[in-house]
Image (cartoon, rainbow, N blue to C red; front, top):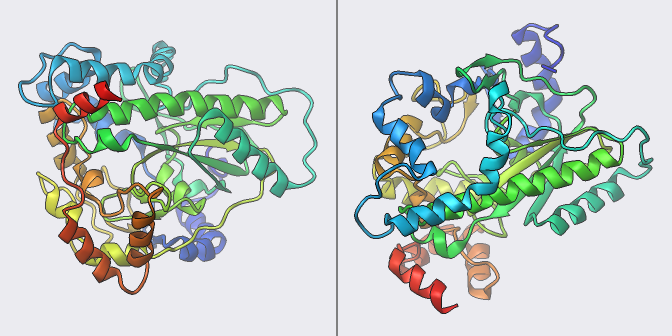
Length: 406
């Protein structure tokens, strides 16, 4: 249900939020201003492509159709029929979830949470130690395949003010069960070798594979919790903004490229989340030094073909309605970014590929670089990154040869 049952005015909610979250915001590096408003999901750039004439076009239609193999493949490396075939196949499991209830206006995982496939058990397993249960949930998440797991409180500010009815892109109530207290955030690593081929339809397979992974994983973890007798709402891009939840859950820090930088995988992750009533201890956000590094690094903004990423310090500027109001942060020009996607007929993650934190941290020299980057010697780390030519593009045909030989 909307918080708290629409009994308070927005000004009263803001006052309550300030009192409740001021300390955790400082710890997370989140700065909310006095004019903050929860985001209306209908205004996200992908939904606007269905109703806003400023975004909607024949090209946007062709972009979405290309994920059903209806587009004519482009000429050029990384955009062959085989590249599109792998990308589209990578989305298959996610698509099964997304398509199953569209006649009810539910585009699950994107404009509505994933529907319950198992009921909440009538008898609850007692939880005497929320910290022990939190450790158990992280173990269960790893068992099902999540690469990261953090837990934070049910911060209502990041829920969408309304969700989207997929039948006509109209606003619909963003209803959730009563009694939710925690948000479990799961991280899913994107394939490093595929990310290195961006921009390409081939690189898009790295995105689609993790959406399919997270759809299955988040549904399974939520089903486990419901079998314990507690509410658990599995969620992907729907219901609320995952980035602030991931930051508050201690998984990473927000960066200039609009991504969460983690110590384990840098920016190379997709995130999912579960809203639950299961009693759980919460993780604490940690400011590691990523923001200080981004203050002196503009590599992602320099590499963006359409200059959609910002220079300078974080601001409250909003290029258009696709940006949230009242949060001081680095904010992209979503319309320019999405326009480039539609030109490619695939997603673009050049900003992820070139990010200095996009490294394989299982290797000791990359871990050494990370320590340098998060220290006062960050300018030296930036110099090292530039000198080594890190973040260059792998030719898609090289990936196919490497894949065939492995």
